Length: 445
Image (cartoon, rainbow, N blue to C red; front, side, top):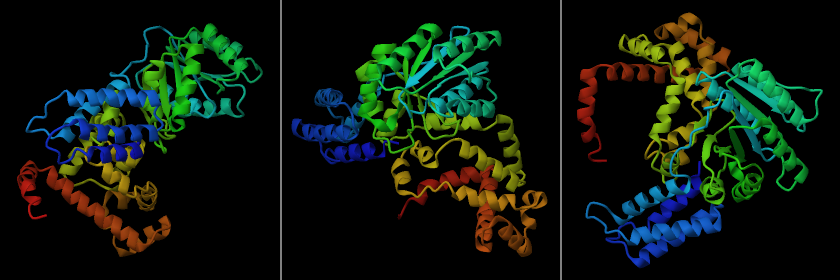
């Protein structure tokens, strides 16, 4: 996420590395590189210039303490200003009405339908009764796609294949949802171009009929500055309440995230990564600023883990680790839960100091496929009793999983090593000894 922008900002900060103090000259040179980095990321020119002017003014107005380098000070100022640029604070959904009606709008291909399913799942997880309305009558299979998503997450979808007027579909869908006592109604509309006056008038009519508490403008974050220009046109028509950035796991340049608040003065409320329905995060400007500057985002990482890991299962797992009865069934369950958390490269980028490493690593998610195939080729007895898997069993497992005997041996060896390490770490005395040794481990490297 924002890898290119992060790299260029890091290079810009190197200008101040080793400098004893901040001067007009070294700050001007750094700001020039930062402005170039922002423009390359497709940030609005006026936004980029105003941002660097503010950072420069604040940097020159501060004295550098002996304990803080000029580079560290500028990073702190940049972090604060990036946070403000993207909205300052997190903006919650307005869910006070019963029912709360949420209208989704945006360009064709922005990912509205997939986001509809993600949002429905997210709100269902908050113990809300949710109903979806399929109001996209123009895109082939859009209604069917929403129905499939609804069935996957257990959320009803209102549709009318006979009716071709989306305004009437929305009107009838809201009545149906109210009869079913839905607390949240999410309306998925057709993608439309801002220059298409007829379609823009139609979304205006849908807004009038629905009278939504929230209007979310869904933006494909890979479109950069074009997305911001479109957002302004949609905002003039709809006066939307918030923005959703989708496809942040792709080759995102960052322009939309960094410019959209300053141009339309509306908060980003959600960010979406990947096709998995669980891959949806609330947008926190301060956390995103930290990630752009390579400082990680541990809070979001922990929140994702909490969403996927059951507390009772975690306690049971801890008991099994202590008793050294952790088996391949437990291992497979952990893999499935980690996969639900999202893209592995994205997860590593949330760990402070790991973003640079993640960029250079080959994070091939297909590695899980081979591991899963090997474990699923084991009998239930073998999964529960890893020590029973002798050479003959390993040959059968390799043949059944379409892998080699070497791959099976490697997985079992890694599993044994991991089990020993987990057993040691669960022993407070051993863990304490390891912590004492850690400062010495780095010496001589």
